Length: 332
Length: 111
View 1 (cartoon, rainbow over the protein chains, first blue to last red):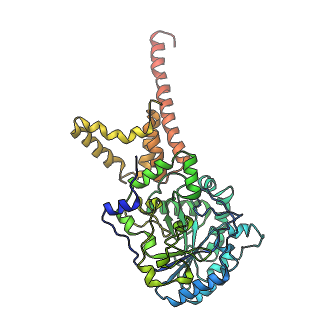
View 2 (cartoon, chains in turn blue, cyan):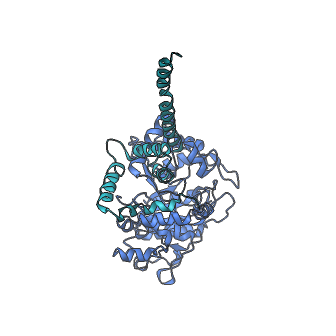
View 3 (cartoon, each protein chain N blue to C red):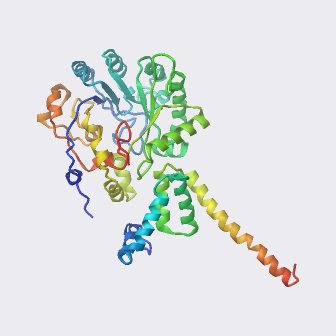
């Protein structure tokens, strides 16, 4: 059975998903990671070498400074902390008074840099000192699912790292001074199925993690696995790709589609190229010349008037309760 | 080709091709019971359904409710425990009939 293209589906529902704003600059600073997770859309691993240069980091900072409307910097990877300019980037963006979010995989604090052996155990204190919002993947509150997706030993290291963040004041409703240090967790399904409701999973995660391991966090974001790269290969290996795509298409939710994150962010690759989101970045769907291809051509007006590039993977963001880097986007 | 094809489950609605009003009542009832949180959560209902699916050995339901359990946040420990409940109930139901055997033995003066 032929599945409708994402754009056909949008047209059928009378939806025109034009950009609304650029509130967030999401910067992918490296494909190097201390882990090699099954679902990773970046295909990140300890062997990758791509790194954002200091010049490109500086250009991102210049764009942030020049545009007060871009209030958030979302740093991702790989494990972004493995970029040699990571600390500088965070410190400089905070001096600009931007809200800084780091997609932190928790285990890098314990593992350090897999290529140089450099320790990263200072990270919890560094994050707290700069009041960074920490957003960390934890696919489940038990070892089995977590290690199946992210590798042996990841669950235990993740809990240890969460404990270190909690000691710095992260994940608590109120740490007493200067507001909350936010630790948000990200859940994505271990296999070819859609996430449970964000609200009910958050309740389960909080109850189980606190009762069994004594660790706390603020919010849980549910994210749907995108049928691209490593996860797509996994689906094909299992003979489940068509079934998964059908599931996503059947779960299309117009309200989730209206909330897709590409309408309010721009994604920057390690080499400075611009994209509508991190998924398009991994599919090399670079913005066209007329929108500005790189951060060095950044022009807010042109970007706000661009046509977002959609593909079949976009069904992942519009299925069920929706999916974004900030979790669900709609009520089912 | 096996007798049960999982894709056939998508054709369940075909049962409404004849006497559609009866199918409609069934599907309304089905969705009202399983589709929403009530006194039991959707997750708890999915675990019960998975256990029943095993007891009745329905391949369609095992397939569908494995997914439903995962999509309501359940894990393999809980799912396995649910089917142990089904298994132990089946075992208990067999064993408790031993009382009937005892009755028959007594009737024959053999116990």
